Image 1: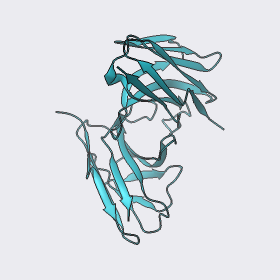
Image 2 (image 1 turned 30 degrees about the vertical axis):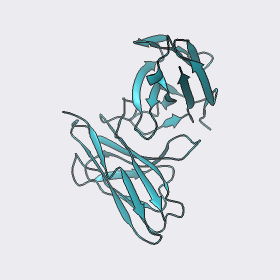
Image 3 (image 1 turned 90 degrees about the vertical axis):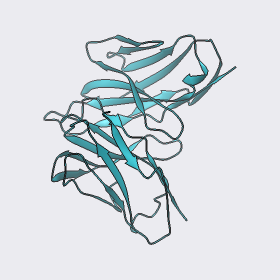
Length: 113
Length: 115
């Protein structure tokens, strides 16, 4: 059963804590992406990776970090430096080039208490 | 600056009726245009992808059109069902060459289908 999964579905964090969101895909896609979605806003790109061990900053990378040690996995860490981290986070994957179709995971809703 | 504008922001229609959602973009150079459906609290799911040479594409009751000259697209939903209630997102890809990233997302149209 091919697809892209994210965990957890809901995450609560206290101010000052780092949290890591998981994203796994078994679609054999080279490229993976992290987006942030806020109410009334379009998706905004945080980070993307087109190949293992390489990743690039997106439009709103400050306060976030990623790693890409395996093709299947692209975890996102929300650090305490992110001033407004409460949002819905979406992971996506695609074949190598970003103009190809992106497949999205179910999302993680992060709430900072 | 690349932009994607969607209208209306929200729409309420009766079950069984048709509706049309609009997307205007200023992304250049253009590679493709996609429509996604996003249920509340879920990830977006692709409905259609159209390249420059395609001016219409259907997926069941969903039909997307593209006018690359005027940089406009529409998504027409026929015989709406309650399950069509969702946000519909227009996404335009700019061809930067060598696979470099350039996707521009619209804010979406929130469609509510009522009995």
